[in-house]
Image (cartoon, rainbow, N blue to C red):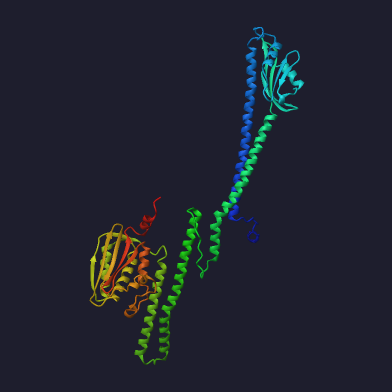
Amino acid sequence: MASATINDQRRPPRWRPYFDIRTRILLSNVLLLAVAALVSVVAVRHVQLVRLDDRISEALAQETREFRSLADGTDPETSRPFGSDVDRLFEVYLDRNVPGEGEQLLTVPRRGRPLFDASERGNVRLPTSQIGHWRQLRDSEHGELETPLGPARYLAIPVRFEGRALGAFVVAYFVAGERAEVDEAVRIVAAAAAAVLVMSTLAAFLLAGRTVAPIRELRQAASSITAAEMTARIAVEGHDDVAALGHTFNHMVDRLAVAFAQQRDFIRDISHELRTPIAVVRGHLELLSEIDPANRRDRDLTIGLVTGELDRMTRFVEELLMLAQSEQPNFLALETVRVGDLCAELLHKVRPLANREWRLEASTGNTIVADPQRLTQALMNLTRNAIEHTDQGAAIEIGASVTGDYVSVWVSDGGVGIQPEDERRIFERFTRGHGAAARYRGSGLGLAIVRAIAEAHDGRVELDNRLGAGSRFTITLPVEGPAAAATRAEPES
């Protein structure tokens, strides 16, 4: 069993012809057009033959009706019924009726010579054996005969007088000429269908080329994209599915370009941020090896410095890990949160952090769907940021309000404010405002974490800056949670 599996795995793949998408589209169109043309030709031929059969049947029936009408009437010369004078009946009928194209009118008396009158297409003598059969005809019959002029359909009716059979009247229709005309019409239709097929194939070839052109551009652009070259884009025209694919590709490349740029910035910044504490730790460890073991004070001081740097690196790595996790779907643990309780608990936690005048500016009793731990983490980062930018005794306010479907929670301080050129960049990773390094040694990730937590809730963080008079950071979140916000953002169908 195992050997069979191995042999199956080693079996070379079956060769299959390769067709690009343009060829497949063209072949599909040609196949559909060819089937449609074939069905059309067959349908036209069938309809024409059915109509021909109906026309022949009607012509045969018409002639027999005319003959019966004459047989039931009188002789135009004597004004007397024909009675048993079948020869006179046949003579009058043949004199008064002209056969149509392809018709032959045949009178067969029980005794005597049969007479016929025929058009050019029906001018042929019918088989003697068949004529002998018609002499004894007792009931009407119809059928088809093979003649030198081709098949002939006939309708024969007996002639009776007072119960005695006097002969038969036969009308025959030679169908070869009519069928030849049908075949000629079908050939014309087939030729027209073939011409349409050729022209449609050419048009499909050109249209398929235009249709798949964006796909070829997409393939070429995709093959040219590398981590170092992300400038390839597709020129998109129209509003169909192919245009939508082009837009999607361009947006994807834009996101990739941003991701690669962020990756490069991340590597550059993290190498810069970690280089300093690593150098400090290395230097103090080398210094520690040279300290006299008896000098306990210098040794403890050096160990404390090393431990502090390691703690700072640990916090730095944890913050980076948290930012990476913020892009995962399980980043939030959502539950119902009472906004007023959240603000009161936050105020209770931050009072011991610094000697500030802590105030609860506004509150609300509404509830929201959010992750209370992540939201508290973001607000704690904002309060630490406010502490670092204010002096002792300064006022720091915490507040919350609900407007419509959104709740706003803010931290406001009366510090020095933020330089206008820093208002946008302070939310980026590893970025500090001008002069911030002189106040505290942060990682530059605090506000980036705040923005990541807000965006994970489908919310946003905004800055109301007053240079020299403080700033207010506001986190705005949907009351019903990120899933409800995403639902409201979908366009109506």
